[in-house]
Each structure stands twice: as structure tokens, then as C-alpha cells.
Image 1 (cartoon, rainbow, N blue to C red):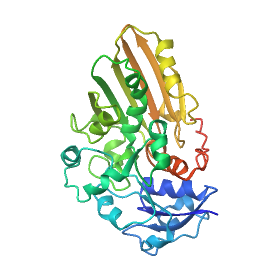
Image 2 (cartoon, rainbow, N blue to C red):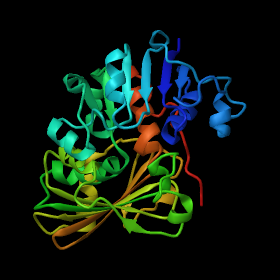
Image 3 (cartoon, one colour):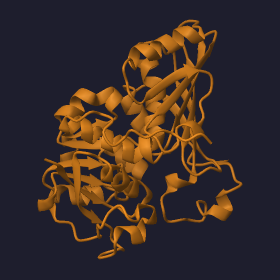
Image 4 (cartoon, rainbow, N blue to C red):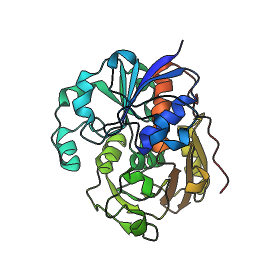
Length: 330
């Protein structure tokens, strides 16, 4: 027996990746895909990389077909759709990530119209919230920058090794801005550019703080001239002097047995996780400061792959079902 899945917003980068991953999932049948602008089109007309793999067409959503619905919609749209849905829900937008309504409305710059449903959602980062995800009917998948930042810092924070505010420097590739280009995401502008944006006000800042138990962080994102990937560098003040080996031991303790966390010393590289659900974490320490490098594919571990990982936990499948993706060698 297969689980019937619907993917709303399947024309975008992350929605398309959800479809790609589910097509190779042994326990899933995709029952419905939707996209506002592509009704009645074949999937491969919009996602040509999937040509020959499916005869799906974009259609009007029929909730009766779905045991689980993946929402890959722009921020603000999921909150209007969720009240109409039956079955389990995996939301990839930011609509239900934050537990503080005032923080949501401040950072997302919109009112929340379905706040009474927020309590039903569990944060979708399995390495930290697996038990709650297993019992949940609704999951809010962690954001891309937030996932890399949280997993890079949670072991040190949770083991009470951090002495003060954490500074997180993040870089993202152009695919993080979605399929529709704007002035600053258009390739001719971005291809050779490197710049920061949204100082002090990026929407993933409260998400990171929330996951780290309210610990103070300063998060600064940057646009980098590559397509796929998020790279974070975290500067962590420690309560005592620690060696590389001691910091690495704290991470190994936290992530023992985690299928998708790869640990080591020194820097990581976004090229080494591209098209995979891995997060590579590298550590370095000097005196009472640790530097933690995190690298993920923003569309997979920072989006579609993490959503499928959450799906596997929710339905009791092996966690790497549909996610046995081996990164290429650049």
C-alpha cells in the first residue's frame, strides 16, 4: 500500500524537488500536483528534468485524494490553505514555523490569519525534533538558512558550552530566491556579485533563536555567486577553552547515528553536499572560541529533502527512503 501525496506549488524549485524525490520513493503515489499558473499542463512542460518519469498534470487540488499534502507555497499562502485541508500536512513555507505571533508579523511583514492552527505544527528538523515529528499530523519544515545555522549550533548550546551571543555569517546561492527573478536575483546581476542583505531583520533570525532555546544570535545573510547551497560560519564564544577534538566530541555526542549529518574538522564545502540531503559540519577551536562551518543544499536538506525526511518519520518509514542521494564530485 502506498501513501497518496499531493504537492501544492509544484512548479517552483523546491516544489519541483519534492515531486522529483517522491517519484523515486517506494512508498508514495503522487495523487495530485498544483500550480496557479500552469493548470492542465503536463509536469514535464514545467519541470523538463522530469520528462519521461511521470504522466502527471497540474490540476485543481482535490483534498480527498491525499493522505498527506506538501505545501510549497509563497509565504502567506499556506495559512489560507491549511484550514481547508484534511490528512497530514508538511508545510515548507514560513507560515507556521514561529511560535511568537508578534515575531512572525514583524519579520514576515504580514498578519497571520490562521494563528489558532499554529499550535498544531511541529518544527520539521528531524535531528532535533524526531520524537515530536513522529507523533505529529502537521509539520513546519525548517528554513534553509535556519536549518544550517541550527544544526551547526544546537550541540554546543544544548550542552551548555556557550558563553554569549553567537554570530552567524550565512551565504546562499541564487536558487534560494525562487524560480521568478527579481532585480537582485536576476542572473546577469547576481552571477559575479557578492553582497549582504537584510541586516538584523532576516526572517530566519527568530527561527534560529527559537530552536536554540532563545539563545541570542546575530545572523547576517549574503548572496553568493553559486546556484545551489547554503554555507554558514558560526562564531561561538565558549565557557572554557576547548580543543578541536573536544568541540568535535560534543557534536558526535549530539548527532550519534544521524544518517544525514557528516562531521569533521575544518571547513566544509557546498559543492560536496549538492543534490543531497546531507549537512556537512566542520569545527575548529582556539582558546575559548569555536568556529563551526555548515554546508547544505538549500533545495534538498534546506527544503524538499528535509520535508521528505519528515514524511518518513511521520509515517514510520526508514528515514532515508527516497533520499539515498550521493553528492557528485565537482
